[in-house]
Image (cartoon, rainbow, N blue to C red; front, side):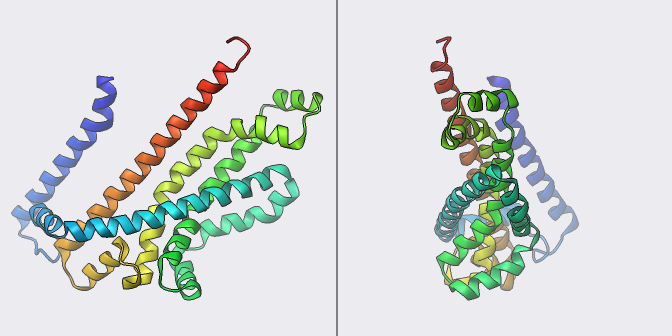
Length: 262
């Protein structure tokens, strides 16, 4: 337990402290302009000064990201169910799912904003668009990666389509699905920030603050805002990972308790 704690907590924090120390040393030794690179002390002061605004903006961004992730999970799983049930459906529509990943979000975001207005809905939709692809691909892979012997056993016992999906394919795909949602969690934060960047002051989240600080050349405040956005992404990813791990543990514990050996 102590070694795991060291690897997961102490080691990254040590690396972060060393990086900040090196950053501060570079600023002191080179005398670089604060417009180019503010010192960590200046960023910390700006972080303290802007804390209420940053907290409010982080709450708005995280709310949009949560809604976007929820929507991408629901729609992604539904699409994956369809792809796993028919090769024709998968061949016909899967390229359109890939299209969501290949088209740059900066090209899609203005279209969403123009179509749905400069509000919360547009930000959540952009977050959903950028985060849905990992859910579709991972869940589809999990639904298709079923042991042939188990599939044959279900079919020999004349299991219905629903029984095969609910009792075999879905439980087998759970680790893949959670892995996709975990990746989508980080993408949802990025999508929300990008959406707010295009929406601007219409939805005052972290993206709008980044745009405002960069235009005003307030570099220490800009660095502080980027730091909060990064921290929010880490927290979001960690929470989704924790929920996923607990879901898997609960699922496997339930499976074991219901096995014939028990």
